[in-house]
Length: 272
Image 1 (spheres, rainbow, N blue to C red):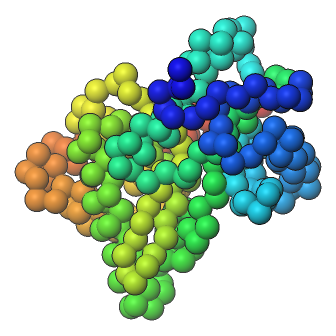
Image 2 (cartoon, helix red, strand yellow):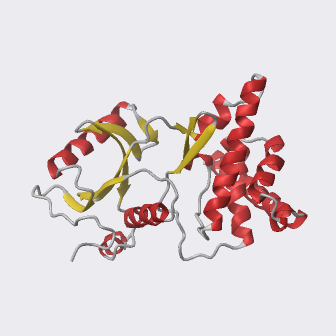
Image 3 (cartoon, helix red, strand yellow):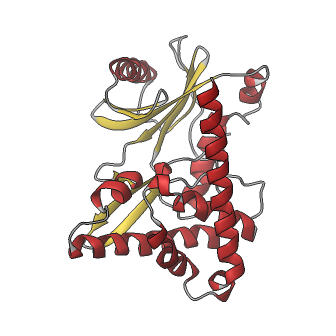
């Protein structure tokens, strides 16, 4: 019987690679080549999308993102066996998001080599990291046209995020680093990159909505205090529940908690 998500479970011929799920695009031999390219990119410090874990490589004419997971902890092997480890959560999370109509990269393969598991997705050509868009391309002090471009980006992003919440989906980490965007004639399309933080066992409460918005409104992601009100207004879309002072206070409290936690981490690093 085929797996429920429609992807084949494949037994790799080469003993160094164990394929858990595949879209059938890459062979086991090619997956070996992907790992080699991934390790070379990390060693050279090039095409690194996220420090020490994610690279952008090319194989078989396909540009892809490779995320590496290392087994840690006493029960890591058991979690993988039971399919509740981070890689399995990511694979299933991407499936659920796509089935819910939320744009995510195509999954290509999930496989193991030794104590490491790799998730491969198709690279989103033509997109840019949201952190770059907010902090660089649409930075303050640019032309009137660029300022309007920033406002359009924020309005459409807020509306898209509201659509995710309207599907009763809660994700633990909405920081700007986990999104990419692409523009076409003034219209933006957004993609969510982090699948393993999809918290399907948690209900979407007002406090969790506020937490998500605070994660994105954190100044470290590129947004400023001046962006906060128009962003929240676009998210609310006229809904009184999210236009009121109580919800805005929830967002402000969530931001304060983030700043306090960041300060504690900074002070801890300074002591070491």
